[in-house]
Amino acid sequence: MNVKILSFNGEAFVSNNVISLSLMTGLWEITILEKHAPLITSIRPSTMYLIIRDENGVERRDDFAIGSWVVEVKDSQVKIMSDMLIDIEDVSIHEAEHARTFALELMQRYKDSSDRMDMERFIEAEDMLLKSIAQLKLYDLKK
Image (cartoon, helix red, strand yellow):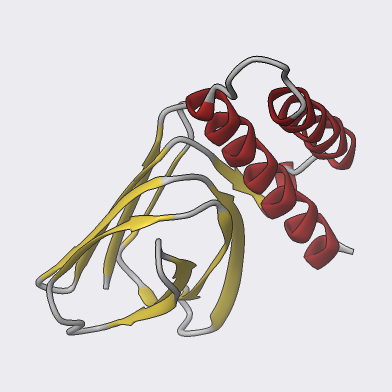
């Protein structure tokens, strides 16, 4: 299966030898296999993993933290656009913990506001929290 992943932060992943790809959609976790039915759906910040067959026929697993946006599956091709893509080798526990703390503080500030809560900002902070949790889970896989 051909998989292309592009992220807004400039990270990219491309492979023609993907056996399966598992990630969290807006509703549930899915696994995409060769000849999957056509699909367009939103994705949520989560960990994502791919099973890839290398040039020697050996299967390996690649893990990533992925953000929000969209996945399209059509004719054994998977295209993903995301606002975050972090390889397991590049994940930083310190950055992820800092982002989680910051997101929780923002959410609390917006929730405790004496004025009307700014839902748009609260949702952005919640998205930031989910992305940091995905990175922390990825770091746990790395250990």
